[in-house]
Amino acid sequence: MTPLAMGCWPIAGITSIDVTEEHSLATLQAAADSGLNFFDTAYCYGYDGESEKMIRRALGHRREELVIATKGGLHYENRVQVKDARPATLLRECSESLKRLGCDYIDLYYLHAPDPNTPLIESAAAMKSLLDSGKVRSIGVSNFSLTQLVEFHSICPISAFQPQFNMLQREIESSQLPWCMANQVSAVVYWPLMKGLLAGKLDRNHQFPSNDGRRKYPMFSGTEWNKNQDFIDRLRPIAAECRTSVAELVLNWTIQRPGITVALCGAKRPEQIRENASALQWQLTANQIERIDQAISDRGTIISKAAV
Image (cartoon, one colour):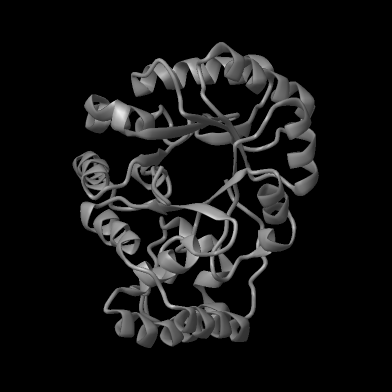
């Protein structure tokens, strides 16, 4: 699978604005045409599985070329997100995802998040049954602590772990990531561009519409916003030196980090995913990485709770 993947949450249109079905289908096609073969979706990406259904419509005829990951254990009830990782729910959602995707197998099936009301060993046993049945070819988990990773892995072998990770949010480097490296578990990270913040295209005076989900994150407002803009200004000359965009620079840095296997790039328009895919065509030098790391150190890591 390619070290960059298309994250298919934005095309669901729940928290992203200006999403259209036409653009979403074109973006999926552009991703595959640009050389990306890994697509990441979920049962809850859309109130009625819109993301999974669009993958089938846009790319169903290219199924054998692709690696498709989806997730179970989260769904919507009256448009409110609910965690439910009971075995019966996971089995049902997996079957529904297969139908939506038009597939007879899923390459990588994640438990989207731990369910506080269901013992983790029960969820793990259900996922193991899906693996043994052949409906899924590998198992992953998302938004897990180190303790949860160890417990789940003792019941069901984990092939991939999906946490948030970006230049400013690197908590996993001191906990889950070393465990993944020691256990040959792929780290497939989301938010490498921190919901567009690290793409370098939002100027200091940008005003987020009231329906833009980014308004709820502290790093998109006030003092933190200005500090982040200062940080991005440190990246711009390095990007110019590489003759690339800030977004490509950030993605290239991310997939060169020790232990990071894949970075998920959310996109809702073809030009966005084409730009992201270009990050696969070159590499930062050791000196450039050193200068980026110094800028990150000067900015300081931002600690924030993962969102699903």
